[in-house]
Amino acid sequence: MPVISFSAVLIIALVAVAVPVALALVPRLPVPGAVLEVLAGILIGPALLGWVHVNAPVQVLSDLGLGMLLFLAGLEIDIESLRGPLGRLAGWAFGGSVLLSLAGAGAKPVFLAVVLTSTSAGLLLPLLKDAGHERTPFGQLVMTAAALAEVATIMMLSLLFSATSKTSADRLASLAMFLALLAAIGLALGRVRNLTFLDRMLDRLEDRSAQLRVRAALTLALAFAVLASRFGFASILGAFAAGLLVRTIDLTGRAPHPQFQVKLEGIGFGFLVPVFFITTGVQFDARALVSSPAAIAQIPLFLAALLAVRGVPALLYARRFGKRRAGVAGLMQATSLTFVIVATQIGTASGQISQTTGAALLAAGLLSAALFPAAALKLLSAKAPGAETHLSPDGDMTTPIRMSLAEPARPAATAGPARPVPFENQDQHSERSRGDCRIPSGAELARSPDT
Image (cartoon, rainbow, N blue to C red; front, side):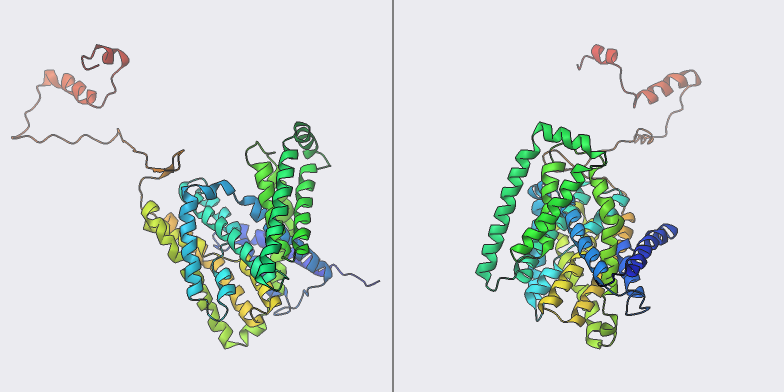
């Protein structure tokens, strides 16, 4: 029996603890934790220090972390938001991104087009929450655009490049059968979920050692991942679909358990997801990138392509939110790391791109996650003071009117010099002046002939 060593897992776990500590000690560091985790993986990996090599335990935990990351990404997406006016606006912008990506993708137009149209919704949500915009119409638009890009690119990547079927007809048939089966399972689970006794049982066992709701959600994610692989697709498609389904049947349209999503995020972001990001850095082929001047030259090109493909279509938002916020949305939409990591792994494994091109793509994704969100937050915080827009119940944008009673009244124009007020009439004059901005009482309104 081969000896399995967990030393590499221990080092990765120590790095996973050190990264948030470093961010807490340097709160002004404008870099997401995922970027630091990948960079730390590069540092401890074979490219530099050589402390960690990917073995079987690290690979298994990394694969579980990738699936958990996609499951949590699906859990964050609100399908209902894609149907309103913000969804339509985000759809037009995403269509523009697709056209731009196909126009300048180069030798591998379809694969690079899929990669360039992606957005890391999981990185944007914490930024919008910290800025206080996760519930504003602008924040909802950014998250809707990111969710749409994430759903579409995962579907296209799974259909075009991770499917084992040889012909396009076989791929479409496999995808249709897979989606039909997922829909049938979702309808069945939705009906079962509405049973009163099941709802009570889940609530009763949620806060006990059984943790039934969490167990069922993770089992569903694993089952969908296995099902996707059986149909010839990447397991990430199944995990992502499981997150969407759990969001639909357990978090939407009902009062969810207050700690359910927190527990799932604790399992994912507390351990599995950081292992995936750090392992990605460990596997990063920095030597091949440094030894290839052509690959180094590709990094700024890919970074500029991300900004152009996802940032330029955000100009469509300027009519509703202004040019400044359209620029902020463009920078946020151009932030892409998670999907770039997944796509480069699939692209290099399927022969779509070389190892050096994959390393250049990953470097561009790291730079986009390090630079674009920081620039967007700086631009958002430097906004000019003005009225804040809100979303009305019917989906229209409204602007509240603010009135200041403390502002002094402007003096009326006079034809000549102002006449002094006699001393004995000053109190009466002051009373009339204050009465100009006084709100009349109900009795006064009742006596008024105008009413």
